[in-house]
Image (cartoon, rainbow over all chains, first blue to last red; front, side, top):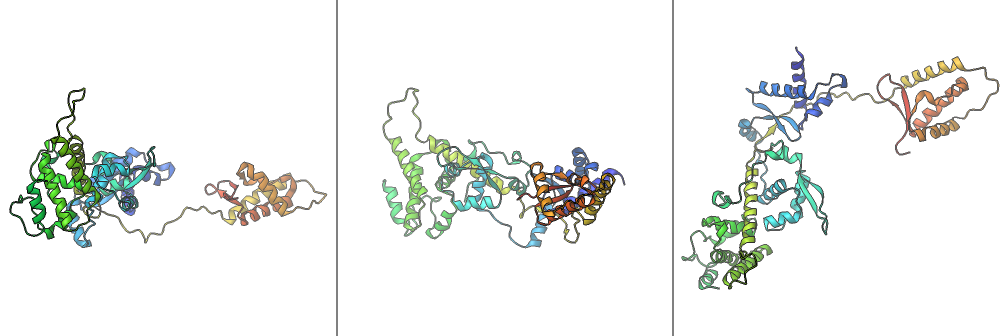
Length: 184
Length: 264
C-alpha cells in the first residue's frame, strides 16, 4: 500500500471517529512529530478521499471548524424518517435576530432592536449564547457599555457554511418589497 | 378621523363589513393567530405595503396610516395586549401624515426639504432586507434538519493514554546512576555528620524554588557519599509524597527532573 493510501485510510478513520469536525491542523497534529505529513498533503488526501466517496451515500464537507463526514443531502429525507422526530423549527424572531447578528456584526442588542422595531428579549439572546451560535466580542465604549455580539464557528457549522462569505448575499434595498414574497 | 375610519372601527368587531377592502378583512377569531405572525410594527407595515403592491419609496401615507390604525383598532377591540411598539408606530405614522399636510416650512439652505417619510422608508427597507436574509438563512441546509454528520461509535476501542507517570523503577534506576558516580568520587568519611531527611527537604525546596526546575542528578551532593545520596533521595520522595514537588520525565528514558507544585 502506498503512502497516500495509508494516509487516506488514517484520515478516514479519524474523521469518522470524531463527533466534531476536524481541521487540517488538528489532523496534522495527531501524527507523531517525525512522521507528520505536510498540510498540503493532508488536503490532497482529503480531496482524494472525498472523490472515493462520490458513489456512496456519504460525503466529506468542509465547514467552519474543519472537515466532517455527513450523509449526502439527497439521502437526508431517509434519515429524517429514521429519527421520525420533527427537526427543531426556529421562530422568526430568532431567525431575524441571528440574521442581523450574522450580517451586521458586531452589533449591540440596541442595534438589533432598531432594525426589528421590537424589543429583543434577554431570553432570546441567552438562547443564542447557550447554543453557542453567538458570542460576546467585546463591549461598545458608550454609556452602559453594551455587549457587542458576533457569530461563532458553531453557527457556521450548523448551517453547513465554511465562512461568513458563504452566507446568502443580501438583496438590494430597492428590490426588496416588489420582489420578496412577504405574505403571511 | 375620517368617516371611513370611524365606520371600520365601530363595526368590524361585530360583523364583517362589506366596505372593508378584501385584503384587509380578517375574521376576528383569526386575527389573534394572524397577529402572532407579525414580528412587530415594521413587519405589519411591510405586509400592508406588499399586499397592495405599493411602492416602498413612495408610500401613500394617508392610505397606509388608515389601514394601520384599523388594525390597531381591531387589536384593541379584541382586547389583545398591544405591545408598546405598535402604538409608537401609530404615533409616528400620524405624525408623518400631519407633517405632510402642513404647509411646507421655510426651505433649508440646500433648497430641498427632507421628506418626512425618509426615516420610515429607511427603516422599512433595512428591516425588509434583514427579514429576507433571515428567510434565506432558514432555507439553508442545516444540521438536525437537512444535514446529518456520520461518525462511527468508538466506545469499544480502549484508548491508550500516553504514559506520563514516572514508574518507581525509573526512579530507582536514576538513583543507581547517582550512587554509582557517588561511589567513584566519595572519600573515606571519618566524622559522621547527622543527616536529617527533614532538613534536606528544606534544602531542596530552597534550591528548587528560585529555579522552578532541577535536574534529578543535580539535587545530590556526591561529596556526601552514599548516606548523603540516600538522605537526599528520601527527601525527594518525601517531598513528592507531601505533594510539594512533581517528579517529571519528558518522555520515556529521558532524564528526570523535579519542579515545585503549582499551588505551593
